[in-house]
Length: 275
Length: 315
Image 1 (tube, chains in turn brown, blue):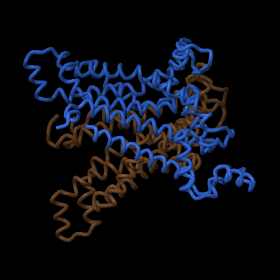
Image 2 (cartoon, rainbow over the protein chains, first blue to last red):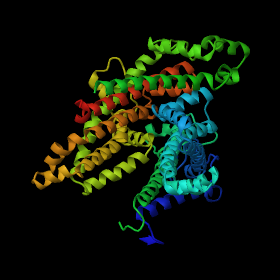
Image 3 (tube, chains in turn red, blue):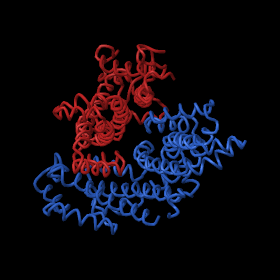
Image 4 (cartoon, chains in turn blue, orange):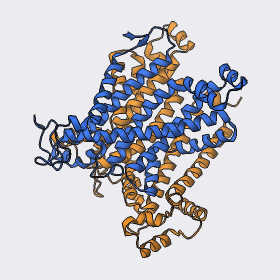
């Protein structure tokens, strides 16, 4: 299917619908949640019923309402971390590509060192020095992922910087900021958009993992990761309670991945070429 | 070739030293007054002074770093703040447990995924191939704890085939060990296998697009023979890299999987230490993970140099 020259695939539509449902449910939680997420209203891990679609949690709170509210924290924290990663990564990446020399050298070597061991290891090491909690995990994930964004932004900008039109703009005496904002950034945008989706996915899973390990969001606040941890004891009793927030995490990740796949296939194929 | 290998080795060691410096800086230098930070609510002047003495905080950071690194090389990581035992004694058995689990998962996952990936390349665009693609998407989207809990719920609780909690007892035989850790192993395998399969498939297909393969095809060789005899040797280097990457990923996955199965490994020890802010233990765990990770990458580099005839034979 084509709309205005853009190829729309079924995957893209399903992915978008999943994202809209998750984000919409989270934003509209106060209006659409059937129950108060913090009010115990029944027994421990009561099974799903028409009244409580996903049953109750470890202290008898409505699981479905808690997932809607938890989505605000899960998605919000991942979004903040991704934005932080992009601001830092794009600025340093462009700086490295434009100025080159020792700035490029310094940033690139720091990136190499950070990427030489897994992110989760760095996160654990940083959290042991600076303490745990929602703020610190956003800052940690944001700074760790800025390294990846830096690499993408740098390589994309490197390719654009050498093109004739950038040189032409410089020769006709445009200021540095003008060249960056009007010539380089617009042409670096499509790959950065796909990178944004991908980074969001990873940041979202990262927040979930740290909260699951008990190092992220702390009670009484709850995100999807910490909800899995808190209700984990249901599993040996044969009750599926922790699987619901875990499934919510998987669902949103699949949705975003589907849209990212579509974005990648869009700009890897020259426009006008039929597929 | 020896020069190339030597370069990689020096680069690896240099990276490790920089990583260790960064680990030290992040845990002991950047956070400011860590004695007060670690204690939080219990930061009475006496407690703060005790922690300062314990970590030797009155000396300049670079001196402490050099001393820490020198100790670490000798296997002395200092004393745990939480239980006052030597860190090396706390870590020893945990490290063994984690390596056991990771090796167990790797031995199953690597041959299986390379085999299945090659099959996907041979039967390209078939239903089986599509299944590989879909399972990859599913695997990268599902958090490790989701897969782990589903396995526990069905295989341990409903059918009671395997134990839900992976515990080690000294009197267990080796087979009992394997049985007790079957579910965490399966979780790790499921987490890494899809990616390895997909990358194996891509590597083989990239080589399959080259002219000499077309030549083999035109000679009338069978598809399986072309893939195994002609394409695979040239696809080895990228496949080795993917395997190394995933083994490293396995080591990360271990942290979450150990939490799911309350398995007494290094990952769970490290997470506990982070929440208790037991800095010496975290530093030691971080350094050990870094050595394993950088070591794996080094081995992958060496193997892909060895598997490439152009690099193997000096011109």
